[in-house]
Length: 343
Image (cartoon, rainbow, N blue to C red; front, side):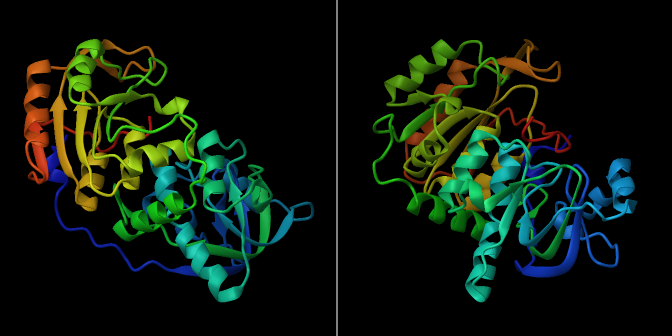
């Protein structure tokens, strides 16, 4: 398993583009796209050609069936793919809507969005905040749809690196579209600690000790599941420092402008938020904590006990100056990049 520093290097992001495929067909649970000649539109899956070798048999069978009863729509863009239900990957998926915005500016046509059949609350709220109401979306039927003009914006991602310009675009759109009335939760602290519930897993066994230290420094704890998506954008858009266990909620750091991040690891993790922090120019630190048995959510995950002395040292270093080196690490974790970020 590579270490965080082994995720550093040079990445090349292709110039974003958006194109139109006439007489296209979406097929199967993952809404795989095929053009009129029956060739796969690889960009509609995930931008990763390796995923083409893992197409489910049902998709290939459905593709061969007659089209007599297949529904047909005029102009649409699909946001459905094998990983679109994860929070981190969904945020990356939303950066593709910049291409739809460009397409609409050039053509005057606003494509309908094809989304998951059972969208989560945060998926619905994020789309609404970007200007897509329920009537602008079609929930995927899991079978087949013909699209006269399928609009395909490119994926803004290479491995775990999401396009910086895509993140900036997404932040600007979301923040500028926040309701004027403000948060129902009142004002948010600029120093935030993210609480993970037992339901989400990877909880901190000595969290009371952690909170005792953090509250003395002006930190306030938040449970993201209790916040609307708009409030999560508000919370992170004004944050100056965040402390959190590794988890998909850290994808919200892309809504911040100038942030310090301390990420807490147990026995599980990926380099996703290290890479995202580095890409956005944020100061980043991490602390590996002792794993404490299997978590009830999954045998693969463990809860963790944070070393309070090491946490104090990291906090002192991060808060002592307006500018710190980008990466600080105590007991740098090994990261399994094959594990899913959103599990």
